[in-house]
Length: 197
Image (cartoon, rainbow, N blue to C red; front, side, top):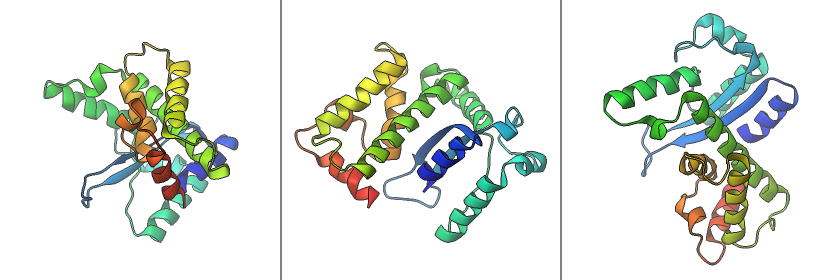
């Protein structure tokens, strides 16, 4: 649902870039979440804190806030709007206090860059499979497509390539290992196509 809406919002200039990512456990737990992170021109630079002010929330275009409310009500799930960049900075500080670099020490803007690119590639895969289910016949072909897109955009020696790959695989709901070392056949493609039904 969000994939198509984000494309619409980009077309009319409401959104410049987006990140889609799941935070989930196996088996699922009530705290599982799905992040829809939107770079909105209307609130650019407004979110100094992860908790958005009432004034900032009021600047979110109604098309977007109404859609989130609709999805929330329709699917019986809660949602809250947060400042993504501020949330990354908060998580970064928390991780560093525990002596563990957040996303292997990537700066905030770099995290947003590889997360956005990963989401773009995942969206492209889903769009192509939705319009032509035979876009790729084998998992290895899909793997080649994903890896070549990442390398073309980021370069072969990109320091955070593993994280960029994570942000491709996460919205597709596949394991990174299935792209790094694809098995013979089309198990991954079948799973992605099943989710598209």
